[in-house]
Length: 247
Image (cartoon, rainbow, N blue to C red; front, side, top):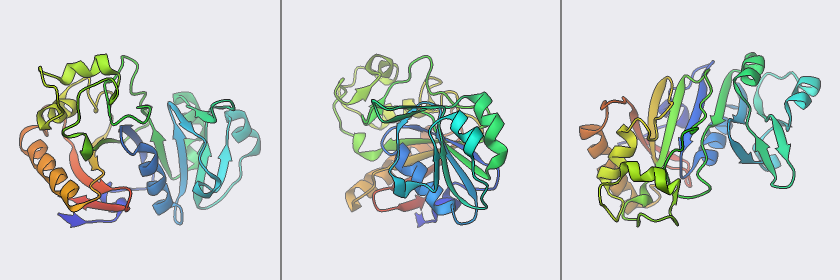
């Protein structure tokens, strides 16, 4: 494995629209990616679901409603702008934009990064009929799975969308590599509704043991799952330490 810059891992180019799905690091990845690009690109951060309003150190500009953006937008050559459709003050959450809003603002930016899935901070999920809401301009889809799900008990406490998660289970009680393989290969799994080039990011490789397990899982997925039916590039990360590995 080779340590690589986040931009090279995902082959970022001007015009990219990147949707992030899965569990275990979506928001962190979104802002790490934006932060790496902000000095040379106009970066749009947004969501098609809901996200907590980010802290002020995460962005240069924020517009908590589409009307606010239309009426008050600032012209700039680089930096991070957060735009949402609306804002829920009670829950401190930004509400997701749709295709029409994205189409109307996308040309104001060089790179767009979208949090396009929700997991309620649980490490695993099953996807409901309306999930994930990936917008049509997407040309790269990044799915995140944390390596520490291996060995976890299959229970409602660990899984958002527990009933839907049963699509990936064959009488197992514990999450194993075969279940992860089904999540990555099923048409109702992590790459459901995906568009453009696909990436699988195995996250939380924060220790030597975690990294070893992530490499083990990546080799299994590369040998037996990749291309059946989804083709995807496998990467490994410790978002906690801002380190990315390419196989």
